[in-house]
Image 1: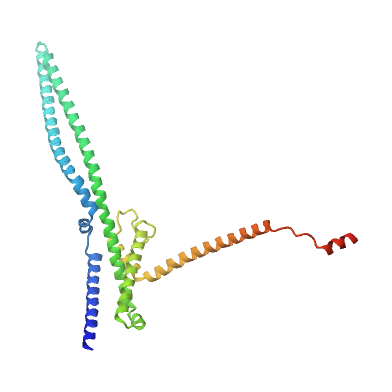
Image 2: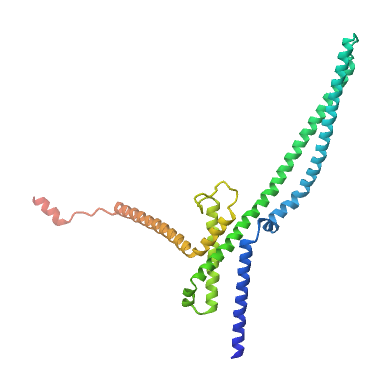
Amino acid sequence: MRSLEQPTKLNTSLRATSFVLTLLCLLVIGFLVTPSFVRLLNAEYWSAVKEYGDDIKKLTLILQDRAQDFDKQEIALLEFKSRLKALLERERERTQAGSAIDQDQIAKYNFEIESMQRTRDQTSNEIKSLEQRRKELQSIVDKAANESTNLYLVARALALGALGAFMSLLAKSHQVEAASKDDENRLQRVWGSMAIGGIVAVVVLGLFYTKQISIFSHSDQTSSAPDFWRVTILCLMAGAFADRIFAAAAGRVDTYLGDKASRQLQTLKRKANTVARKTEPIKPPKPQLVADEKQA
């Protein structure tokens, strides 16, 4: 007898331990996990980083070198312009003194300045091209990183929905105990309710995130991501009332499908009656009726 009771107690303790660990994991996922942590688990993000990360680093280094070259060229150009300005002032003084202007020297300075301006413009265009290429590659990586936010929201919705369903069961614990006194069946019912709560919370969050519903009338519909506490309240409530939400949605679907099926059945019946009337043969008149018509 003792040998039969020990495995039963062991199984009960294992189920209880696994349930407590699950609750702890749900609490951590629902309240402590951040998008940055989820990004570490995002395979698509790391694949994009592996494919384009080296190119982005190289482009960044090249851009830094090109920017330094551009600054040097800009400084040299300003120096030549200042020299040309000083030369023109000296030539103006020489003109006032009756001396001739050194046109060759002025033309040489103008040629150098035009050449430096062309080099500077080429460097500027190269910088713009490299910057555009780097932005394109960075946008690919950023797009993959943004998927971490969606994964983070889904994970939180699942965890918070399950916690909300569990809180609802705790509030109705006397009903659960009255319905079943078997620990195994009770745990199965709790697991099932938590699973439904998580799924319903994900659906409700999806409707909220796509702006199909709003948790508050003054919610910011232009924000890039839902607020932390709005998501928390929404998912906990969705999990707590998951059974009612699921029943209401199922009733709506059944009503829609039932009405649609009944309309289709009525249409088929009308078509069948129309076809039957068209294909019905014309019956000849009875002999007695013909004789009566002749006597008349």
